[in-house]
Image (cartoon, rainbow, N blue to C red; front, side):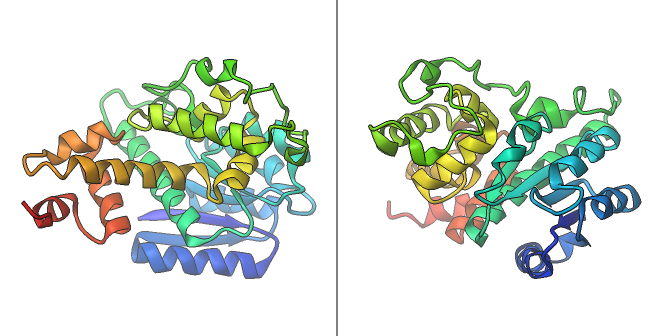
Length: 292
C-alpha cells in the first residue's frame, strides 16, 4: 500500500489526480487530499504519506514552502511538484528540495503514471533500507538518496560534464524565459537532450542528472523538455527504455534480467511491470510471441 497526498487548492485538480491514481493503481494507493500548504504539512504528519504530489502555486503557504517543512521532518518523502508556466519565481527554492519530477499542468495520464511508478520504486527502496540491518533514516543516508532521490549520489549519475560543454547549456537560470531561446531555437537543445538520454538511458539517471548535464535549473529544464518533446523526462526515458528492450528481446535466448539491466533497470520485476503497462505483455510473453 502506498499512501499518496495530493495538495492543490483547486478541488477539480485534486479529484482528477485521485481518479487517475485509483484507475491505474487501484487499492495499492490510499489517497489523501490537502487544499493548501498548511493542510499538506499536517496531512503528511498525520498520515505519514511517503509520496506527495504538490502544486507549487497555492495561495497562502505555497507548495515550495510546505515542501520545505515536510522535507525537514520527513526527509525520505518523495515529492512531485505540479507547476504552471508562471510558477518560475519559486524555482530556485524548489531545487534544494530534491523533487522527483516537475509536472506541468495540464498533466495527462501518460506523464503522471511513469512518475508515480518511479515514486513507488523509490518508496520500496527506502522500505528495504529501513528493514535491512544497516537501517538508518534521513535523506542523505537513505536508499532514496543513494538509489534515486533527486538524482543525488546515484550510481551511474553524471558528473555534470559532457553536454554542458556544448552550446545547449548556456548556463541559463530558472528565471530566464524559454521563449527567448537563442536564435538557433529549440532544435539544437532538443538534439543535445536526445543525445544525452540516448547515451545514458542504460544507467540509473534522473531528471536532475540531465538538467545538471545541460547546465539548466531543474524547473527550467522540465519546462524546456516539455516544449521540446511534449512530455516529461520520466515518461520519455521510460518509453525509450521499453523501445530498446524490445530490440533486445528479439533474441529468443534473451534473459529478462540481463535485458532489464541493459536498459537501466536493476530490478527485473519493476522492469516487467513497466514493460507490461506499455506493451500489454510481459517481456517473456513479448519475446516468446515474436516469429522465429
